[in-house]
Length: 456
Image 1 (tube, one colour):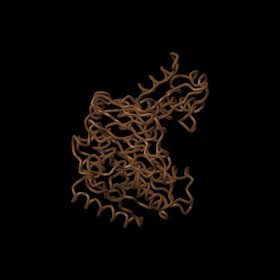
Image 2: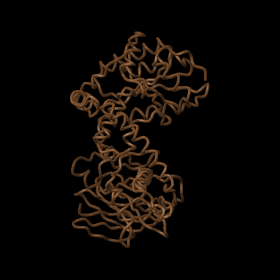
Image 3: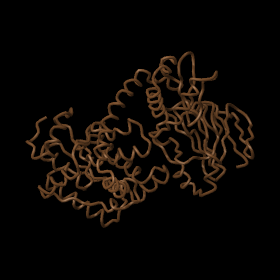
Image 4: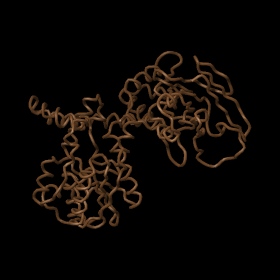
């Protein structure tokens, strides 16, 4: 891949970075372009070095006032025209980010990032591109590591953002924001300033505007010290990762099976925890996992006669000298109801009565080929979603379609097996029962399990 000669440290850094990538000559290189100073420098440098097969993608999250977003959009369009770079603008419906943040309880920043990355992935598929450049700097890296340190992160988290994490690539992690600002000033490149950057409503802004100035004043060497911590964390994390790989869990029909239990238990605790957390993340799809839970699971596995742990949505146990990890069914939060069903039965749990009855293939109920026992019948949890119509739907959205509010939402029966939510039973509320969609078409006439919940 031929690059044009670099002008200055910014283009030199990007040129060296692009030279390490396996970019096909005709592949479209995507730049995530917010319109801010960092991504402006990245886009201009990329346009100077590789003007052909370049695409800028701007995502409007719908969070700021319309006038500010319109002005930013005009600036983005004008600069792309000046640099002769193709531009795609993706718009998120106003209110959608805030709604996702409320459902997931992950905060507005995380919700905006989810929408942004989703938009970038769709455009990647359309363009058959496998490389997206992100403009994170050394300053962003320090902020990230500081937040993770304060949040109790281990060595893997303290490494900060990865420069190479396909399909995401961050060429400027070794440069400070001041170097990008100087580049923009020298070339006369306009950029926008996001008004939300001055708001202390967001965690990263509070770290940048409140915590970091305090550290700069009272601990003047903290940035250098944290950078050294990041370097050591990288070395420690690599050693732990290599050890965990030797006892990595592998897929089997009913869960994830580790190596021989004796070998697993003989490894250092850090390697066992890393292996277990990675497997739990792969099994459940959760990105944030509890170290306390992992330690409790390993303690139960290595002591007593049962050698079994159940909690946090997983089960860990011995089997024939191996370690078996699979989804578990538990309801750790207070309130609501939770009833385990392992076949046709009638179960009373306090004021709640659950009946499960097999019916003919033409009746109502959950298809026998769409779930596996045991199942639980429970009240909803925050973040619940069910898979159908080719994707997932959050129960909050489903309940809104049904016109359910407040107390009614809290008692709608949810049926779940180890693979997720099987059914949401809305018929008693004047809606239709909704069932998990099967991966592929199967015979129509199969037995069905009718689940009736009374007393809630």
